[in-house]
Image 1: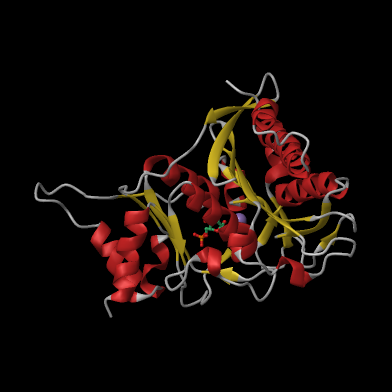
Image 2: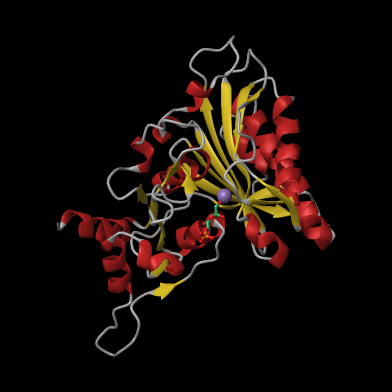
Length: 321
Ligand code: F6P
Ligand code: MN
């Protein structure tokens, strides 16, 4: 089985700036994983602070953010960083060609109850190097991403990457402190039976979403369910399960969150690129996620992602007006 380094050697990428960035992500994720595995539960619970999205910040969000920022700021290729935890962009090396947007700890409300969490990264090229990054540099369409990564800190820790039109998964071997290519060329089944939505929101979502969820709840001729509902509450974990088994993840607009809950640049775009390269699909109900041009760096969007046939079925409810 190829190690992380051997894989990038085999792809002739081991001397590329992208590899150095991925190596930083890998090393950062091993540090975060150690804290999750060995940390005192008291270190992981709420700090009592709120982040710029007015959500409670758990201590580990800040720790994970600092670990990653520290690594990225030492990387010569990284010009600027956008993080969920920082209102403004963070400067890197003026001469660097790359920009990173990240959610350092996704699903953080799950930390204190020992349920999988993740880290999400979007990596793209800066138009003109030699100058400091500005917000405008990050307002790129998702389709312009060079590469996208998430780490799922689950029953095993998995590093999933979308690069050069393919998706690969690497599993962390804790003894060797190394990731190995365990899931080469991941393809999302074109159909599935898992639907993932926070049904607590169902009364405040668009009618098309209600119609689709009702459709998922239909029984077959034998009175058996046709779909199964699963919602962990960590985007990375919910998406990963659906990617491996076939399914759809939906976080729609709600009456109290008219733009949805998830952030376009550092949550939806990287997941959408992974979905695309694994032959699946994403949308906000009206438009492909990867075609959306962000207007602000922390912008939210409705997010539908998963098996092509399931996403198409849902989008059909929007078309049948
Ligand atoms: O990062 C936001 C997030 O925690 C996602 O990981 C998750 O999918 C979503 O929010 C859950 O939101 P809610 O608690 O509204 O279901
Ligand atoms: Mn998140």
